[in-house]
Length: 219
Image (cartoon, rainbow, N blue to C red; front, side, top):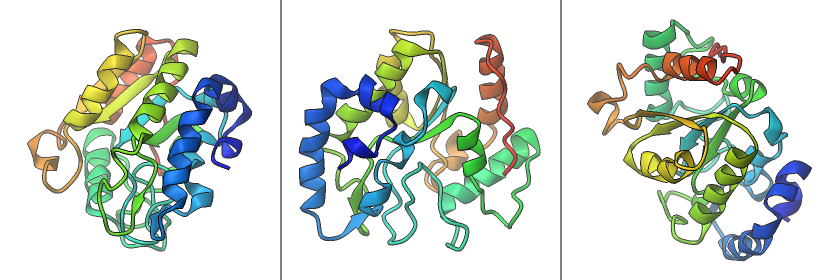
């Protein structure tokens, strides 16, 4: 099911890892309380990867029921804004002057439509449990996905937090991928290096160095 939910190009690139995905799927579907819903688990892989020029790397889905939508950091507009997303909104305004249209809510679909892949390293977790599926194989699958992407095209990797940085280092070593590092926007670390890091303007500068169009970060 999960493999078939991906864009045909992703299916082609990741065909050697289909069995890995199927193993993960079996573990995930055995869960009774899962986020996001099964039809949204592979949402980040449903668009054409040839359009991707930025990867915003997250950790795992929001654990609160109804929050996770299959795209890293994104939520539906009728949900309370998680603090990480609120901090992203603050830095977005400080860095490039973007003010969210509705309060602190950010409609990240605009970013996706411009080629920003909103990818969590783990695509699922249990309800109300952060990182519950961090050791069932997702990291291996998403790492291979980014390696496949890097083998076909240049892109900018936005790595927020030391785990994301470590994850990205093995990708950057073997490609022309540019990694933009910042602290994570979570309440525990935003004031320790996320605020003031200017990740959005730095990403656009990196895109320019790669000969790629900038991102309009408006939401």
